[in-house]
Image (cartoon, rainbow, N blue to C red; front, side, top):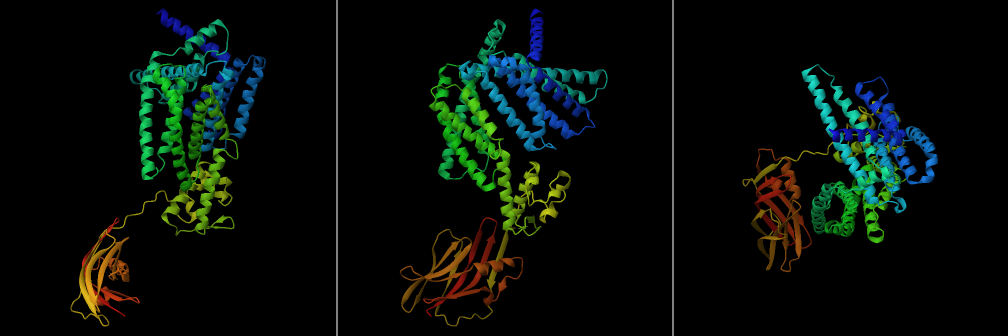
Length: 597
């Protein structure tokens, strides 16, 4: 019981000190929790305004935490502690006014995620800046605090959910929203507060704070085993798989269609996290990992960048592709820093990540401006090519290819979701809003949205034709003829007969290229004298493949051609054609008439 009592007392004291240590952050978390509570309960407030406030409070919480750690790191800032707390509120208000939109959009969500990441990364770096502390210890303390907080919060929520369920089943009915409210309180408020309570004052010289720091810096044996003997071997095997895959790409020159980017991105992130977590470990496997993997990472990420470039060339830039490329550049830059710098402090990698994140939200090189301009240019090119853009206005048109309709649909939908259509000067402003965009697509472009590019495959066709031998054949002007078999062949040249004219020998051949059957004559030097293509004749017969009439007059089955060296007439005697979506099979026999002009 004493251990439980001590745990409760320690946790309670930590939570109280956390409220005093991070007052602004606690206030922002309380506000966010209240907004989520209101949304769960159902309200008569504007959902967009509530979302904007919640997003701003999340930003404010991270910023105020970062400023508090800066105060603890730099003693000369302590006298400005109150002003910095006020600054966090002012910055939050500015975020609400300038970084949130009238309606919740994907760009607003991405903006929040990137800014929060940059603030958090900078916060991690501040605590060990100028090598005041070992960054590996700082990162380990945050990692352990996050892991314990998530574990405790998960167990707490499951316990509360079980209690709510038991009361609902055994005692009296409870509102189903009780589960959502429980999750909100646990994960929106308790989890981050408990996480903060576990973090020591990293640069404090107080005895109690030093003891707490030593506990936070202690590397758990379980985590050491997980990093050294499980995660690193798994990453090594995964690296070998990626290397083999990229060797296959180089040998076949068949590039992937998009699945590699996120995979390599996740791989790179995992490598950096394990690199930082293992920075204080000294066993042979971890030391080898830190030496080798920066070199392994560079070529793998470079291949991923080439793959992303091919994807961008085909479909333009979107914010997801922008961040995949940006993370690839960051990964290579970080690896080079670890290779070239004498000081292998991984804290510089985190600071670099924060800088890249900030760059991605600064116009005109930010992800949203770049992706909007890229997709706008693609849409403009397709409309111009189809003569649908005149005097900066869209001209509706219906007779477009399936691919162009699909591209226009996907680009326009993407730009609508991201809130870009208001900035496209040739797009009708009245249709750029949510309540007018849907249902008016055909009025804008002249066709309904094309969400797929499926084109029904051509039905297999079979055709049989036979010469009506009861009809007279016109062979006037020809000196010799042969009857020869014809068939589909992969060979470039197939001999089907010989013929002699004026004492000279000639060869009658066939060749089959791209579903085109050609009959030709060559002399003793293999020089081609005349060619007769049967493609037009066969295509014409296939159009009437369903016609039951198979016996045909000679003039229907005749093709001829004359050159300076020889003239040739081909009359089909019997022909079978089997056409599928993949290939054409031909089998039959013909009469070949030749003469010297």
